[in-house]
Amino acid sequence: MDIKTVEFMLLKLVLTLQLPNVD
Image (cartoon, rainbow, N blue to C red; front, side, top):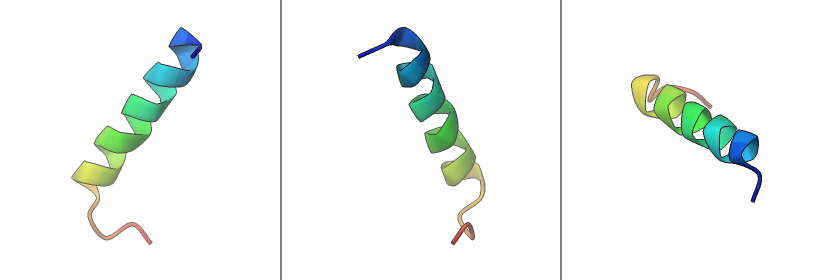
């Protein structure tokens, strides 16, 4: 996996955890 892809996935995960109402 590309490092940038991993960072992006982690960022999306953090945002999802912070915004539990995201649908």
